[in-house]
Image (cartoon, rainbow, N blue to C red; front, side, top):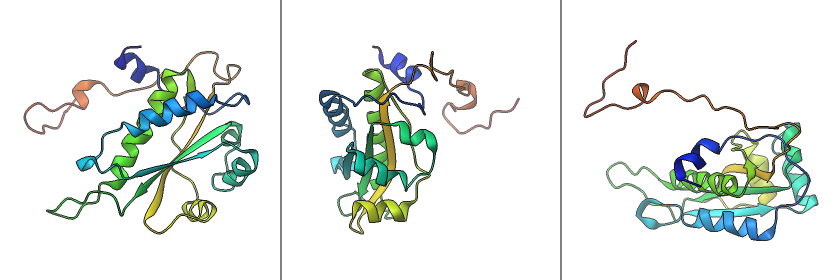
Length: 179
């Protein structure tokens, strides 16, 4: 599908069928994430794939939403702050930014395969770090529940509300748009 069409089709899905995601589809999604750009090409990310029942149930303790439990697959994207690039002028660390770019590559790849996904960032960070036994320099950025869309809940994809370009684009200089 054309890229703009793919971007328009990607939406947050919060209800999934129980059928497992095919391994080749998981690998396709991870390969797309691997090709995400990163500052100075440092690639400071790790992808933790959760699909076994016991691990999925444990993950549910980190985010208490009923819909979250319906996903057959979760990919947790983490930033590695020992590997991330830091801008010299102000020491800004780009690890989280790089990881979020990989997150969106995952969401777009899932959409390309006809799968649903949703960014989850409002999880219990401390519980997730303990559950995954992450070292101090690795930080979870997002949990991505992924699966086949529950067509009873989503007979068609919801419309996404987006601001018009004239509210977002500033030519040459920042100029506040007024109505």
